[in-house]
Image 1 (cartoon, rainbow, N blue to C red):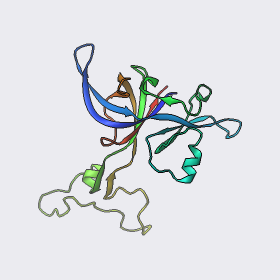
Image 2 (image 1 turned 180 degrees about the horizontal axis):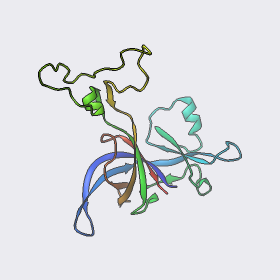
Image 3 (image 1 turned 30 degrees about the vertical axis):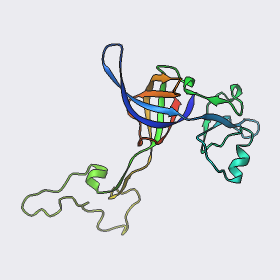
Image 4 (image 1 turned 120 degrees about the vertical axis):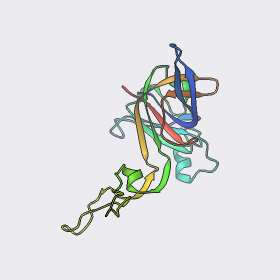
Length: 202
């Protein structure tokens, strides 16, 4: 499996082979570097730890962990199902990790919408606006008797957005090795400048 830590640049487009406009989301590949490994003998599983970004001042535990890789990574993620035998601590990863047409999944934090009611947040229907109707955008009944409390997970007003979202089934449609940028066909969750994890799908 291939994986990268990227930062969302924004939307663009590209003209495909059939003359159709293909929507692209451009992702900047920040200095990805292998900062650690997990092995089956020591940790019980195989994984590769990748760092990205550049932090000016690290805390002592982070500085100690990143000492061998000589990196000041501000974002650290662990990826399983990667062939760790072919990677060593300190190896740098660029946009050429992926190939055109690779099927990928992208994970990011969705845009925060603030406090929202049930109509906007959960697609509830509004109440009737005819004679006798007083509940236009209210929640309605949430349980009137037993068990005298609200069950967890009840769809109610609350904070909308700013959650971890994964979109699957996208593919790589553009690679710019010179600018270290990749383009994913389709939409990617999160605002511009947000962190996006790109992983290959089998």
